Image (cartoon, rainbow, N blue to C red; front, side, top):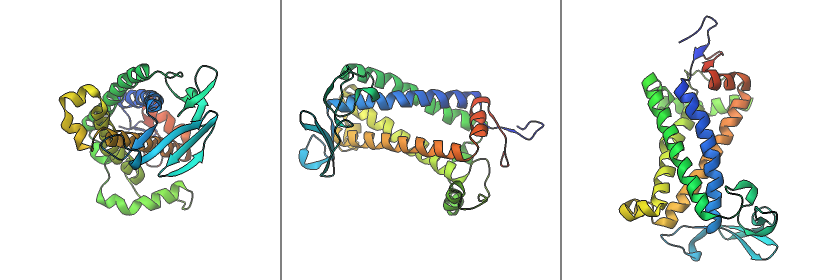
Length: 263
């Protein structure tokens, strides 16, 4: 649908609401997830805790010193990771500081409550986006196709101002399609399923799901990696919005109406 000025009604109310609510839920999930991580500040590529197969650890080998070890390589991260803000005005041995976790002080039980509630909020937003896009008839337009593959680099070059014009595309450009496909249908399901596998209640009634990911520690590793992928998507998404007319892009996600050459 277009108005008299050629603007296209791109986003339904359901999509816009789910977008902004998901953003809030995602922020809380990351923050509460780091609170949970603090209770066991390491990731192992194993079916159970195994220091010999440790991928990441954030420690305080002695008071006042914080270290981060990734694949066996250790760097001092005092004040940032390992020895950080305790959320109560002091410093302590803690992986992530209080200013970035929910709650700010160390409380695993409350962190899990926040995480579980907003996990279901995020899932509902994700499902709303899929259903609303399918009902509008543009879900297929949002999925990456084989013909889009050769256009990925030219589109990125356009974003980086290395070429003056983007390759021809429809409602969504190739990079948007790649992001929506990867995040909506690969990363998001992975994060949801590994989150369920980490739930003691779900594990008790559906242990095969946990074993599908290689055990609880492997599921925890995949869950953390999925979070990093979602954060990377968020950063790329913000970059794209900022370089493609931030006012127009923000207006479209608030009002639904998009104005532009490819509207």
